[in-house]
Length: 387
DNA sequence: AAGGCGGGGGT
DNA sequence: ACCCCAGCCTT
Image 1: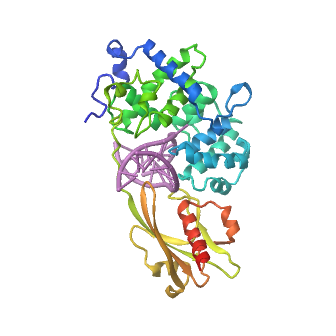
Image 2: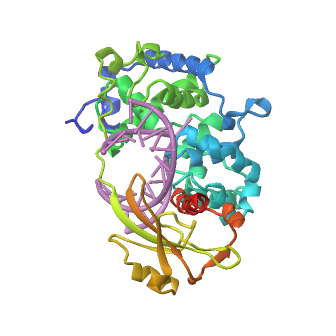
Image 3: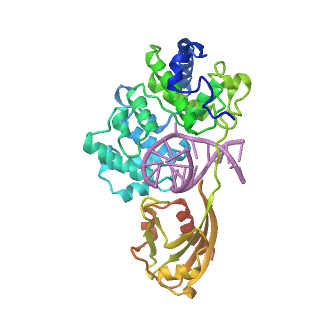
């Protein structure tokens, strides 16, 4: 199985200059590729809320920032649900910078990878302090928390039309298929190869004087193609604007490229928690430590472990007796990395936890909750209604 | 270089 | 079931 290291053409910088003569790529070919793709994008681009342009047809940098953070490892359809409400709540960079972190997290509820929300908040503050606004250059952007090579390149190119390359999962798949490279997805050598290729192409786009071609259009077109046409499972090669340039399509290998990533098994996690209600119908909640799983989010109090949690331990944490806990519900919650077995109890007496807080059901709606906790809370309602 | 980090939709 | 997704940060 090729790792990407051995091929002449694929090995990086050192050899590329010296192999220019025997590469199949040539500037004219690349120019046509870039033009075909940009023309396709001009008529096929989805109308997404963060693509709304203001004066001079330019994107709002702040909206792009928010959308790029939300889109990290997250599909457009999921982001569409959260983007509008988030922008409405925090309309500008300075509004976000001066917001409470808890409120930012709350607006992120259900979107996952919650560190992104805290990074975005921090990023807004730092950008305001150091630059007064969101910076333009890749180097300045990448110095901000939560902005890596991809996000910096996306903002610089899509908003400011800088000839900066970008490589995400879509771009990687498209480029590997076009070149017929059977590399394994997501590996460092594969990424390096793609970044080099993306840079060549975006520079080609910058040279073009064709109307629809620009670094901004090219980068976004590449991702759009990956999302709409050159999809992971069943690519629509018959209607692809690049089908005559695509080696994978020509050799019928689009289903084998890229080779699937090696994945590791989900780790089990055991969680026991309790719904504790006081006489005022308030629920006891506590906040998870920042940094780890569901960092900074709220939850009904509980314990978690690599092995099943004894009910005695849960009772001790809540300061109640074991007999005060009644089994209420259980379910398995799957994430990409974890399989969480959740046991939900109800406490017949009001316990307490350090740092705990009593909230009404209405207040709870405004707090940051992960999907697992939403399900825990929902099981309370569902059960009550069925009685 | 590897592991941690969510959640939902497509196949 | 297993795949993937407009990745980034820490160790």
